[in-house]
Image (cartoon, rainbow, N blue to C red):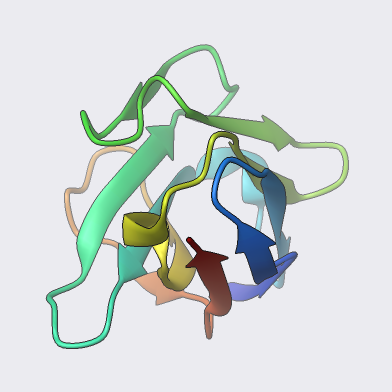
Length: 119
């Protein structure tokens, strides 16, 4: 059983930056593909970015790929989301999630961290 705890959210002005962290425990972190998702009020949860086991491959949604960067430090059991040039439409609850590399479904989720971007 993997536990995930996000941190680093907050209130930032448009154009600003934040770095989210997700600390994992209770499992072998390096054996999981890690993803970031977000959910804005009244909207469905959407995919943000994903990173493979060793961090050699990443993929981000078109809406963020030029502004957000996902990375991981397996020695620290942590995955990061660096968010630059933030826009008000990036306001959401951000979740990290873990899945086995051969699965599409994410089995483990954090509780989320709120990101609010003011205009």
